[in-house]
Amino acid sequence: MDIETIDHLLTTTRSVRKRLDLTRAVEPEVIQRCIEIAIQAPTASNSQNWRFVVVTDPEKRQAIGSYYRQSFQSYLRRAKPFSEQFPADDPRVLRARKVTESSMYLARHLHEAPVHIIPCVEGRVENGTVAAQAALYGSILPAAWSLMLALRARGLGSAWTTLHLAYERDVAELLGIPESMTQAALLPVAYYTGEDFRPARRIPAREVTYWNEWGATR
Image (cartoon, rainbow, N blue to C red; front, side):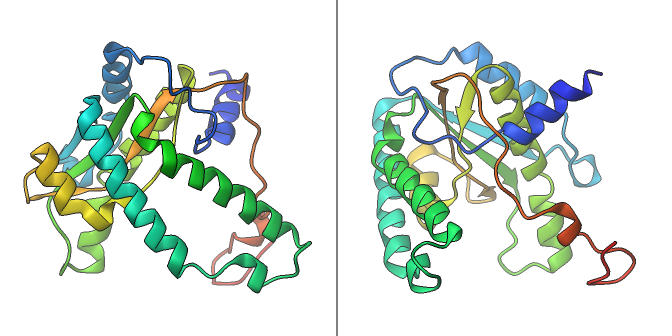
């Protein structure tokens, strides 16, 4: 395997917001191929209980975008600004401001993304144990991430979003998703503009890796 190329793919697959090309159509066969790759991901007890709802209908995307914006506005009202927690020139404030700006852009334009993909998994865990929750979400999140990687490898961007889940039942009714299914995320998908992406700033792995007991770093 070309490790350098694989590492580049893994470290530069970003949540794409402002760089989604909202004017270019996405071929259905590309989406289908990426989903074929995604479902190679593992599921609990090999249940293969994932489902993917692909939304290209403009009116349905408009409705989903409306729910998303309502949820986003509620989120902004609840969120405590970083500027109230740290000095104005703190790098965390500057980074948070950039993320907020791009998130606001996505909220305004989500409905314009030519494809929405909602990864779903069979089952509900509202009253389940931690183990049951881990098994359920562990049966869809790896596939959804593989989907984002496959899209990225083909020049398409996506963004991991979950704010629409405040209106999960409304979206389920809109798309005919059964009550027995859990929606895990909403991925707006489009070709991206520009050439490439860079790795993001992250806390060094050695600071968040513990060996043999909590807090023991090397």
